[in-house]
Structure formats: C-alpha cells, structure tokens
Image (cartoon, rainbow, N blue to C red; front, side):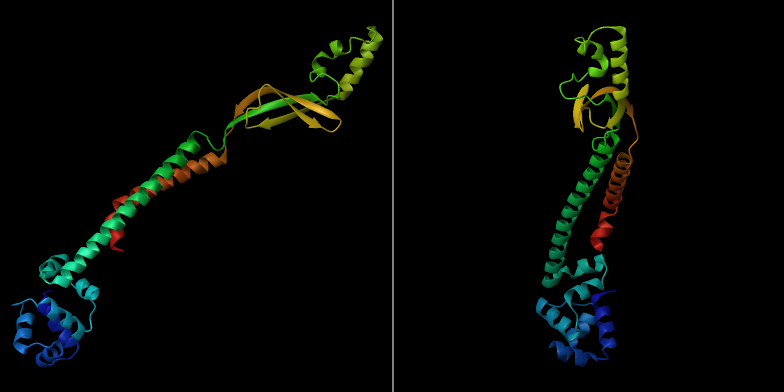
Length: 237
C-alpha cells in the first residue's frame, strides 16, 4: 500500500470528499490530489496536520506500512526520527536480552556442573561406629583395650571373666552416617558419658538434589539457547 492509497482509504472510511479533507488539513485540493496519486510527499508540517485530520497517531500510521514502504517515507522528518528512536530502543532491548540470556545460560551451566560434580549434595556417605558409652575417666578406646586399662585389678581368671562380662554388658554399638568426612575418630557427648565413633567405610549414594540440579541446568541452557535463536521474534513482541 502506498501513502496515496492509504490516504484514500482513510478518507473513504471517514466518508470525506477531497475538498473536505483538504480543508481539514489546510491545503489545496490539488495538493491533496497529488498526495493521493503518489505524485508528491507531504512536508513535515502537512504530514502532522494530515495525521490530526485522519485522527491517527504516528505509531498507528507506521504500523500500516511494510518495511520497504516505510523506507520510502523516511523523507518525512517525523517518520525518520520515529524510526531512529525505534531502532535505538530495539538495540538497547537486544543488548539487555543478550545479556539476560547469557546470564541464564551461565546459571544453567553452573547448576549442571554443581549437580554433576555433587558440589551441593555430596554423594560419598561415611559410616562411623561406636562400641558403647565411655564412662568419665575412661579411655576413649576402653572397649578395645579394656584389659590394659584395668590392669590394676587382680589378674585372676575369675576376676578377668567378671570384668569381661561387665564390658560385654556395656557394649551398645551405634552406627552413624555422614556426608561430611569427620576424620578417623570423633567424640560425641551422650547421657552417662561419651561415645567415640571410628570411621569404618564409605559408600557412594545417588542424591535427588544432584539430579534436580542437572535437569534444571539443562533446561536453563536449552531455554536460553532457543530464545537466543528466536531473539528477533521476541524483540518484535
């Protein structure tokens, strides 16, 4: 659609004759006829009065034409200025969009790496075991070397058997698991004394948190990549 065709259509829609529209614009009918037959382009001042007479905003006017047709209208100062503003705004939006999508992609990569390497949710489970409650004043390893700790007792077989029986009665094994390496030994205060836990073994377990992080990371990376490919379409929204 040319500018002349557009003016004719709008004039017909408003049910105005050429003399009537020319009067509203403040130009000669012959000048309006030239405009409608694409034999002339309006000056910037006439263009403004034309938009007022047709009850149009500049964005609404621009939206009615294709990019190629608009290019021909850039000889009108207001049209050229408006297009430059829009182009500058689109470039700023494009820059922010690229920055935002880059951040989302980087965040996705970090999430995936953290999940893959189990940085947030360790998958190595350490097992520690305590033989029993150690009474105050006793060695932390009394259940391993009780016969040496109690060497001041008479070493008769009967007394040794009695002491062994007492130690067996105090045995109360307790196992704890931790995703943190607490060392070869650690002591915990409990009712009646303390417990010394000794490292026994470690095993690897799958944790849901790491799977979620990997899936989230993949989603964010794919999401940002797809939006990057459709960036031009997004900027037109």
